[in-house]
Image (cartoon, rainbow, N blue to C red; front, side, top):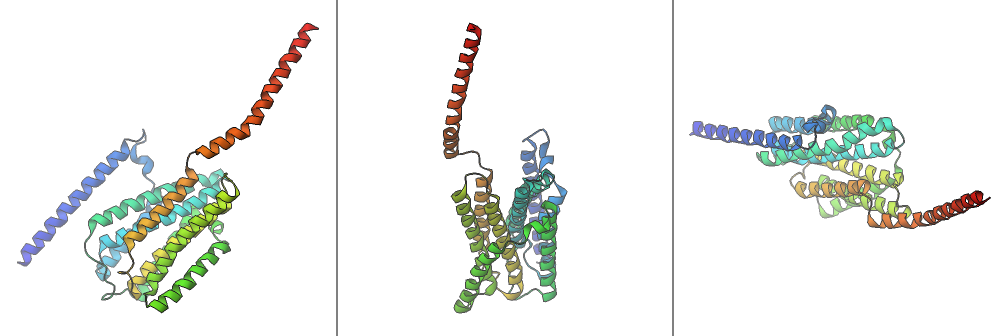
Amino acid sequence: MIQNNKASRFSEFGWGALALAGGLFFFLLSLNGLSDRGFSQFVDATCGIISGAFPVLVSTYLRYRYGFSFGKLLMILALPIGLLYTNVGLIGMVAGTKSSATIGPASAILLLTGLYGAVLSVIGYFWDDGQIDSASNKLSLADLVSLQLCLLVVTLWTMDLSSGIFYYVGHAHVLALYAAIFLVAIHRSKSQETALCTTVANGALVGVLLSLIISLIAWFGSSVDVDSVAINYGGVGMMLGTYVYIAAFLCSLRYGGASSIDHVKKNWHLVEANTFFIFLIFAPQNLGETLREIEDREPARIMEQRIETLTKRIEALEKSE
């Protein structure tokens, strides 16, 4: 009976590995047909390490150290980590508008880390090999501190690669927003006896959405042109909220609340917020902007016509003399 169960698990694993390899093959084949460079334009070792090493290594370690589901952990961690560094790259690109030397690395971080995080999250979704049950098997304090330090180091390294660490500090207005959110969140956690990690994760998502909305109001209320101050507010706010969300999930594996965090819904909201924000920044010119440009160009066009008419008259007078 035991041998049959082992054979069944081995067969299931083999078919799963074969399906995964086939899926990756066809995925790379789809990327290969987009340009003459093939899928090499989607490959960057640094971005792969930034967005892939942490979720894969953490999921592997916790799977063999505590028995947590590798697939669940990868699905939960990979996408937020990719989006975290997408925001780091976005802020770096805003800084790079004044320095062409930084815009290239920042743009690679912006685009590729999100792609890698999404792919790893999909792999984790189909890998599904169990549940995360932190109530019966909790992380040790040493492991939790080590994971948090690793996350911090990778994030600081990514900031340095993008535009320098100091460009991301000093945003007191964003910190004030999260201070207000977490004060309310902690009070709510105590009054309703909700796990603190769950409440902090919910507050982090609220902070992401509020940062997006506030930055857009500030941007469109001041100018239709790119407003670096407003974009920085949104980018830093979304980056900080995503970081806290990831850190809160890691803490929940020790202090409880991991099962009560609706990771699928929250990850989807993170994707929505980031996609909307990036689209607005890089979106093509809309109808309103086109009409405004036409209005602005009309006086200049009339003046050019008058100058041209006067020039012709002067030329005619010179010929008649």
